Figure 1 (tube, helix red, strand yellow):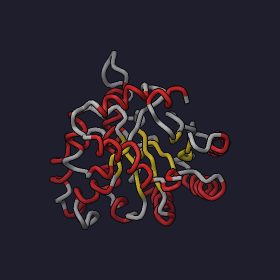
Figure 2 (tube, one colour; figure 1 turned 60 degrees about the vertical axis):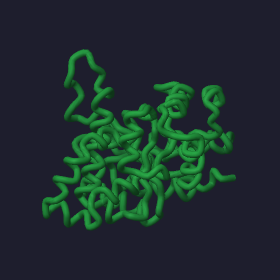
Figure 3 (cartoon, rainbow, N blue to C red; figure 1 turned 135 degrees about the vertical axis):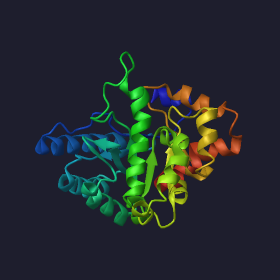
Length: 271
């Protein structure tokens, strides 16, 4: 709360960091997810103006996740669902996760995604922490899987937020659109790649400087950009300052990112 006050933030939406709750044991993952969500709901109840939360899921356990979606949204009144970009060797567009996304879409709920280091790529560069490169890259992998497998176009009523300005997506946009011409991909993207990308939401955590924000605005409208801080790994004031001093946005646009767009995504915050 002290860090929020320093940064001028009224409300923070909480989620747990990696590695999450999945360690190979279904029962334990379900227990941990429920514990995390109930603890988060209690914190919000004690500080309703300061906090909200994205509910933890025991993915890749689909059945357990469907139960937790129901409990978290209906009973605990979570603001949405939190997911990592990958689970083991599966990214979010994998057909195994289709029932989860169909249920989220039915509820017109919000999904917040945060990257994780996937099983494939944990030790690629000696002396470089995997998250430095792999987090942004895994966000891009999961976006491709959601687009190319048709989840994004099929589940058009859900809202999905990608951390860190969408990762490396902006740098690879030409490859996104070129590969989407293939018939086996095009059939899952009846409106094409760019309209789907423009519907996603993107947070500004570790991406609020001029280069990534300028690139993102070429693909997504201002209405789809929301403030992110990556607390406790980064200082919220630093993240807010980088956004307000990057020279890309005027005062009205900054207010939209920090306030108006978030309220539209989570209407209860209007109060």
